[in-house]
Length: 122
Image (cartoon, rainbow, N blue to C red; front, top):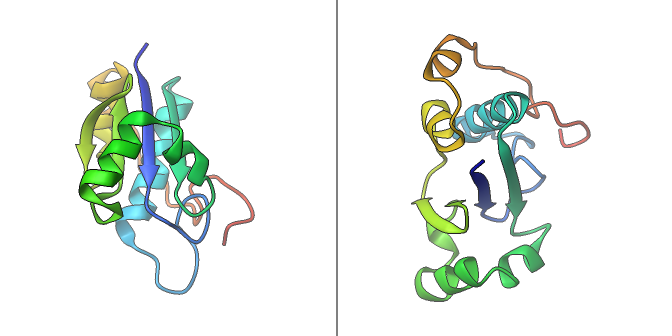
């Protein structure tokens, strides 16, 4: 199975879906992330503000940050290789990355939970 790792820029909480001005891209991705996880995807997220060691200890991410800086985050790795940078993957992309049926991706409703299923970040 493909391992999907998302390296977020510095966010106020684990999902970035908090505060008074919420970025709709983060709301959508939080729902898509939870959906992919529920489908059995091997997927995880790392927040630069809360987990800086995950960035420093990963040679691909560390090299990316040294070359490009944090302005191009988020960074998406598939099995340790860069697959996407500068934006969050859409649900169909997550499905393709994880080998989830495209029917499942197209038929599942998007969740609208404030924190994408996480508690305590709002």
